[in-house]
Amino acid sequence: MRNCLWGALLAFLLQMPAWAGSVAGTGGSTEITQLLNNGQLVESVAKQAEQVANQIRQITEAVDRKILMIQNLRNLPAAAAALALAPLQKDLQAYLDLYRAVNDIKTASQQAAAMIQQRGSEMAYLNLSPKDYLAQEIALANTRGGIYAREFDRDSALITTYNEKSAALAQATQNAANITGTVQGLQALATQNAIGYSVTLDMAQVLTEQKAAVAQKSQEDQLRMAANGDRALREMAAKAAQNAADNASGAQFQLQSPAWWSW
Image (tube, rainbow, N blue to C red; front, side, top):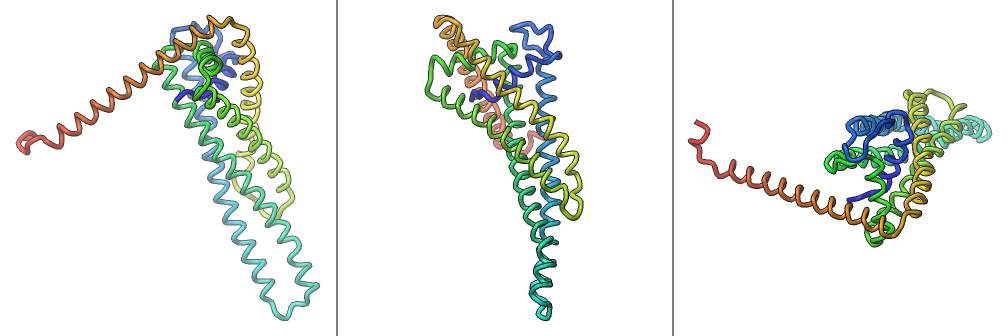
């Protein structure tokens, strides 16, 4: 299904030098390659976040054990226990905040990476330049409304959420700078997150600009672009249905083949 987060990403990539010399309607193999590279970058954030989340979980479990051990010391004066517990509890809260931020960005990154891969395949199938693809996305939302508009709004919200989670991770990483212990891979994640944050901020800005540009086109032009998008969507659906039927037929043939067929 069509998705304007993808459209926003395409719009952002149009601003990059790698898109120079793009020819509308050629499919733009260079653009698709660049797009998939960006998809891999976003996916790498998710993979790094997963490793860091596992590391943080192990640390919090160790801190929890230390806190429990101190709390179970019956002969330890209350004042001494409070003094010993204070830094551990502070560290634990910082680790928990960091874990939440890392886990959130992992989810956001996974969703974005999956979408990029899907839309990259779609653009290649449609043989469209990023500019033409994005124009159809926005025109469909503007002129048809319904599911197109809902997806457009949903994906705009996804960009905002990604930005918010990236900013939250940056803040949590900064807050965790003085905690006891070292989280392996956190610095690499912080670097990758900073790059992703910059990209998604540009996506949001370019999406706004592209929406304004399409809105300035005549109603006739927007209807024409929307019609092209509808036709392309039907073609893809028909192709997918045919592929599914072919696969099902092939599987059935294999199941029904007599034993002597493999002789």
